[in-house]
Amino acid sequence: MDECKPLRGGGAGIDYAQAVAVDGAGGVVAAGNFDSSSATFGTMVVSSFVTSAEYNHQAAFVWKLSAEGTTLWAVSGGGMDEGSFDSMTGVAVDGSGDIVAAGYFSSPTVTFGTTVLASAGVSDAVVWKLGATGSTVWAVRGGGTSSDNMLGMTVDSAGGVVAVGQGLTLVHYFELNLSRICH
Image 1 (spheres, rainbow, N blue to C red):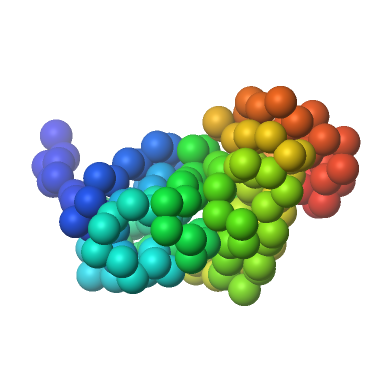
Image 2: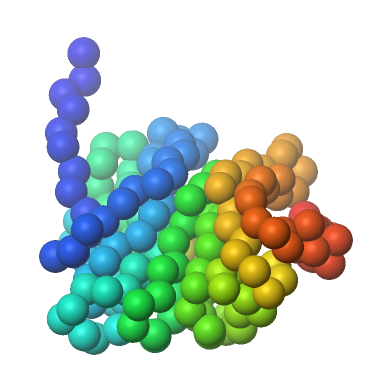
């Protein structure tokens, strides 16, 4: 039997790993949120964009580990507003080793890699694609003027994204952006 070793990632606040996936080589990807100004995943430190010590902000993260449990990379995304909640609630790995995470954000403006997204409502759904090395490929938002959240997702054999969520205006997400998400 292989030895299992516990791994810890996160910051000084309350942290949630809300989704996990395994790639073709046995590597693990975790995604969720952390509630502090920074978080440590293995040897990687990521920032929440908010420097307040109040811990009244959740930033999204994606953490990639090798099959042996070594941290390969970690990235964070979200906004700069105190009191906002930005999180990833689903994650999957496609056949090329790229990672797709889905979740939500309540910040008026968020940054995922170099992509900046503006919210249309109370909270918006987000789908964030990362290359195998953690660089942002793209990120898209969806939703209307109410609360819209992604709750889970997967990728198909062609690399298309299938995501599910909830919200009063989430249907607009799929009507407006499905082709952009799937290709």
